[in-house]
Image (cartoon, rainbow, N blue to C red; front, top):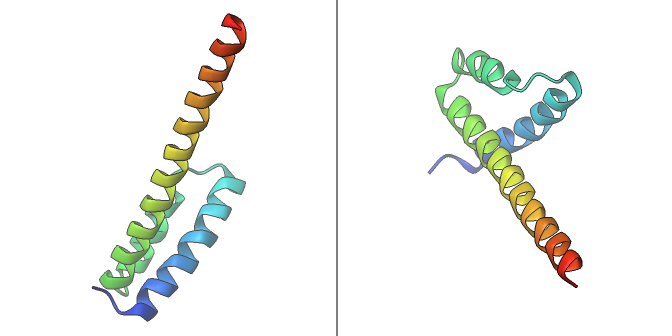
Length: 80
């Protein structure tokens, strides 16, 4: 388990990176930043990449559920 300070730093950096990534429209910006981090701290790089990937997976999961319920409700309205 990583040091709690490392996890906190990685989480904050992940949030900031994803916001910049979205604004710039560069969907792989987090990989570039991971490379930059890796030159100084492999521990922070790994924690950061984990933080980014879990957030991205969460967003995809939420979008999947939102689309499923939207389709279900549309089908129910058509059959209603």
